[in-house]
Length: 351
Image 1 (cartoon, rainbow, N blue to C red):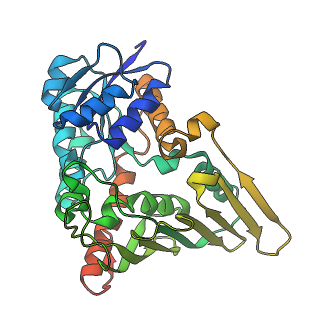
Image 2 (image 1 turned 135 degrees about the vertical axis):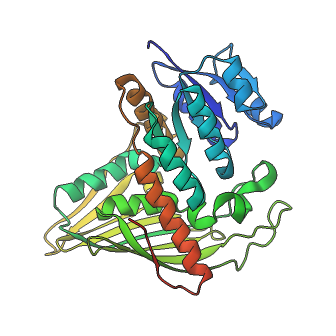
Image 3 (image 1 turned 60 degrees about the horizontal axis):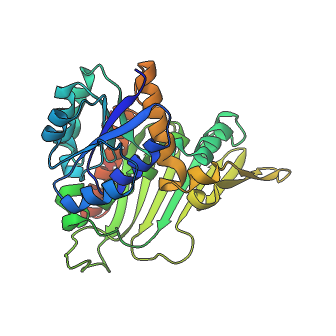
């Protein structure tokens, strides 16, 4: 196909980010959007990244009837993902769905059956895998510079979730909780770096500070610690705080038997440091996208994942990352939520 005609389900911040990135790609056009909030559709239209004849609808069914789509990006609230995926599959379009792919185990089971029989490109929006600095870290691991990863860590200390229409993101039942909605990105990244599937999770977490946001009453944790064990013996810790925007927001690290790697605010600096275990090597490496790409959503991560999605459609290949990878990121999040509710009891991850 000369031009991939893309629709967007969900015209909030992420939907607008995808429209901005897709508009920069040769061979892709955003020709329509669906969202029940008219104000969100107006913001999307005002961004100037849609085609001149784009259609704007209140529902996905209306959009599918009004526009001829090749592909759909789902950027709606988490609890709507499964329904929208099913509708898109019935229409036979290629699909990129934002993370978390679904927010509960029953959704994972249902989606596994749907994806198994789907012959179009299906991709999940775990854009951290597409960021150049993270790909460079993975190459460093593949080159053997760190040896076998043994300890990994991630700390995200940030401010609260941004305000959303209806503030669905503050609701445990609609998102699966902070560990599912927010930290699935980093559970996925650490699994990729560890080089093995997670097998056991323990967590301690609480809602200690954020009890009133944007006139809503959150029921999700605002700080916590997670310990993950992997099938190859590696271990990872993840710390999150949702009420501390001061200082560095994200830190990543890996200790192997041959070296050490650390990255502070990789979405800002696109860099990491490496030390060999013998102390003879200390290098700082930068893998930054072009400035104009870095200024797009998530330091270019969304741009690169959208580019990979369009390329997969053109090549007739599966999307990356796909369902199996996304499933593990949700399973770790659900296990962490369960462990935290049960005093830190260990939760095994199913094969």
